[in-house]
Image 1: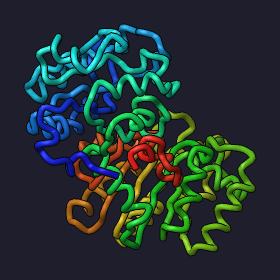
Image 2: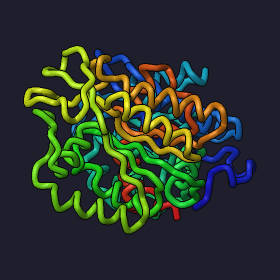
Image 3: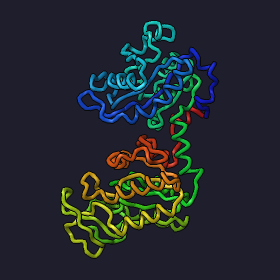
Image 4: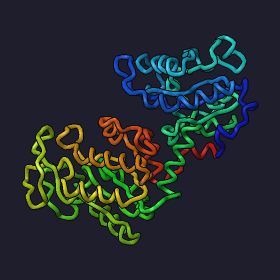
Length: 394
């Protein structure tokens, strides 16, 4: 897989570069509420501009399903990007089929063109061959800088590389290097802290990581499903039914691979989601209690594991952190990983929307070695799947 950094400056100068970005930022009343996805790609944009390239940026917002929806226009993104790099970024609303390599920069004096939401075209998600070929014809080189879209078999992600020289972007390259450090080039001991509400969404990740990891700590709502399967009392806590056989297989796989599975030993509970927290051990739970966070003994056990590890992967909060009464577990995990990362004692990878929300609440986003905002692509990579967008670059 070739990186755009490997291309000589003379081969970038005056060339038109197609750059696939993930600018799918949250919008409220036409205003961007979180700019992280834009912030992270600024170095790539500046690198290409400094090398005298012209850019055609391809991206999307939301799921318009092939229809033009005003609320999902990339206009707020073009405005934010223009301010950040102090260079005009022209939002081009022209029908993409009316554009060609000769006219796209003749009718627009800007050096950076942002095509309107690529998902306004149904051909994008259909991975249409002709559509991909036409987009490819607009540029000299293609750069995938959208790891978070790379699990999609979409025209501008996977099919386009058949028709134009394709490269990995600076950010995508760094993301893959970080993820390889928790899947292939591992420095041990390595610990995974995995949470969330459902086991069903994380089974394949757990199964794929068990042979590689020393410890897997299971927290959050998904831990309740394991506890219930072990015939332990969980009160009226959420759990998934009919997972006994799956959990039995996971436990056996862990034993076979000498992977230490860790589960909550005590809990922070409430009768309702808006209650104040009460700490209880297994024997103290009553039928109306909901387990909404890990308890103090479990927190200390996890902190000790973090301290004895060299590499940490964290995906999924430890509890119902939306109520700060039940955020203690998630907050202490975040703070401990952050501190040990800053001291250079561990290599840390954080991923998942709720996990990122936790570290944002604590203003710790920049205190880890790598934070992935990639969502589905991040999870599928951890499952061991080959992503279409990455495969296309090889």
